[in-house]
Amino acid sequence: MLTTKKFDIIHYLKTEKDIEEYLDVVLEEKDYKFLPVALTDIARAGKAMTSVAKAVGVSRTTLYQSLSTEEKSCL
Image (cartoon, rainbow, N blue to C red; front, top):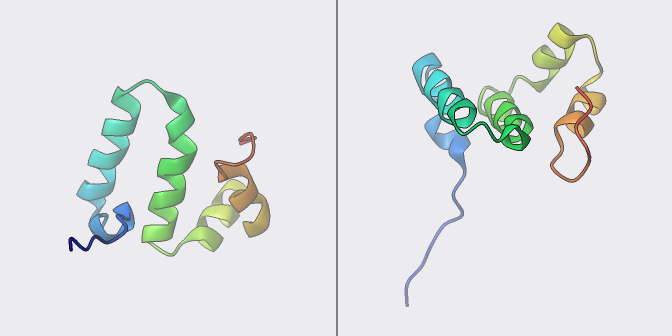
């Protein structure tokens, strides 16, 4: 039986270059509905949601809600 693991991009976003390349690919697609997902992935990879929230002037909860794929992004 074939066993698989759930893929999570954050395991591959280890350097600034990795992050830049990831964002480049997302932006090249010009399908900006993926931008909030990519920003969430980047923040999760760096475990920096609190820092990102402070930098943009919102609470951490608001940032999570804004970047949620289940709700309309409002950032």
